[in-house]
Image (tube, rainbow, N blue to C red; front, side):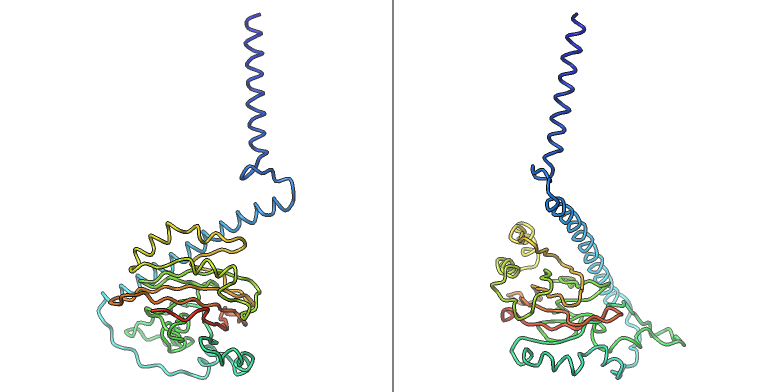
Length: 294
């Protein structure tokens, strides 16, 4: 009889635990039971978005490490003989500069201050050793003779350059920001939104305005990590990379801490891809959302 009571109590206990476990599973993420297709889609989209954000963050870190290694090699390795100066060919110009038809299309916008139209070419990583002669030609033959080969652009200087003031780069189908030393960059994708519809009052732009940089990069990065909650905006993801898609508009904030300057250089810009070639090169029209600082 005593054994029967013990077994009965044990059965009720197991049943209670099973019911509680089932109830906990039924609550789902955040305590809400996903009993509608929309809830399931939202959960799936959130998981996929988190996977994409982590992948893009890894890509940007890899790009930043390789940029640093390349810089170290240039500063520590013996200086080789300078290769012959290259000339800009007609083919280079076709790849690097927007066409006359594209300039005519955006003529009204380009008459305004703080606007521009440019091309970004995919980063190739082409490095030429002047001690080696390749009878089949150099990989640089296809790369325009500008700083960074046309893969880097400065919205501050309004030109292609791989230098301190570079704000954006194109590599492996991704835009990269904050990849240079002494810089902090942040991107978000707005989707198929007209460029002239993007203002300082746009929902996706407001979070960029809430962050105030400190005097140094280290202090700014610490403050940025502590206050990332200001980036929690529905339907928008903020990060150092974003996929480069045609007919898509983006917002970028790039903060550069130039040595020997008391204030950082700060730029906030909206840009849109109007054309994407088979090789990944893109045509970009852009405008400053506020006058660059610093």
